[in-house]
Image 1 (cartoon, rainbow, N blue to C red):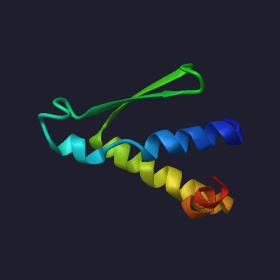
Image 2: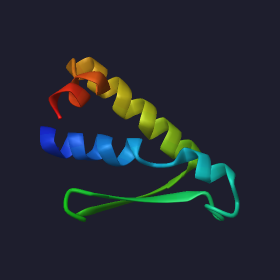
Image 3: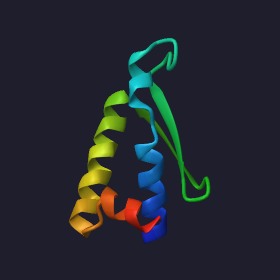
Length: 75
């Protein structure tokens, strides 16, 4: 993935309302569909996988030296 694609992934992952996964009226089955790279890839994630992906993306950007705070400053 290019850096731009990684940024898009981070934006999509951070915008997932994880609270909805615990409310059966808002997310009946507890799954999230995530499309990546101009709809070339489709992920179907359950609640635990969403939480793991959020953690993985956060840790990956910390290792790259790019944190969420620095992106907010550049906007």
